[in-house]
Amino acid sequence: MFKIVEKRLLAPDIWLMNVEAPRVAHSAQPGQFVIVRGPEDGERIPLTVADYDREKGTVSIVIQAVGASTRKIVAIGQGECLADFAGPLGQPSEFIHEDIESLRGKKFLFIAGGVGAAPVYPQVKWLHEHGIQADVIVGARNKDMLIIIDELRKIAGNLYISTDDGSEGFHGNVTALMKDLIDNRGKRYDEVVTIGPMIMMKFVALATKEYGIHTIASLNTLMIDGTGMCGACRVSIGGKMKFACVDGPEFDASLINFDEAMRRQGMYKNKEKIADHRCRIGRDQ
Image (cartoon, rainbow, N blue to C red):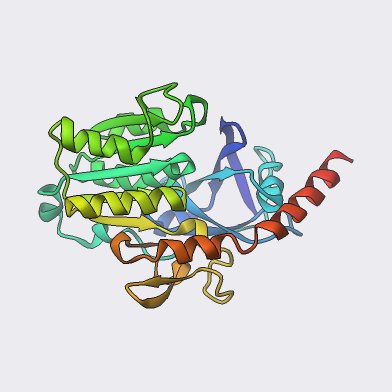
């Protein structure tokens, strides 16, 4: 059993949990994920690592309660335990294998949408700890849905915020803000990392291709089983079939077939709605 030592609400239906998991904390790297099972009768789901503390032996995850399984997990309180917390799994972010001096010569931009700010945080933190200041864009529908802003502001070279309704920061989406930074504010980037909704990452990839910027996208939202056995996260990368959970979750965005990935992502929506409805009924009784 894995104790939840901290639980706090970040935004409507979005929770942060800090979990005691010394073995996972010792080995975790930016870009990786864990398999979490809330109650004993719960479903196993993959969640990207949002932070880790090797000394304290804790790992942070951020959960948006959007379906039956995630609602069961966020119903567990601080001081209580998760049934399973396995990992780290998946491939770490590719930049951690690069030469540090080479990395220091690059200009990084991270683009996060919604809950994507959570897995962006450990990547920016890792770079910051190695003397590399990356710029970050965080986008959301409105200011109430922005998360991890204060934490990112402490470690980012520059933090830029965009909201669809203009309630905070740039009025518009993250792609428009990126173009504004490059076209109107004299910014230059060698590498972009984007994490968020699939449609957002698709348009970020299309935009960065115009500028010739190497771009990495995380397909963490495509994963279900997290081990490659279910096959649900199959995706075409440069015409070759890959598994997001085993080969990724991060890939060269210019090679991802986003349309195929979005079709696959929508395959189980109706079943999830039915399960979530049953979960809500059971909770309210």
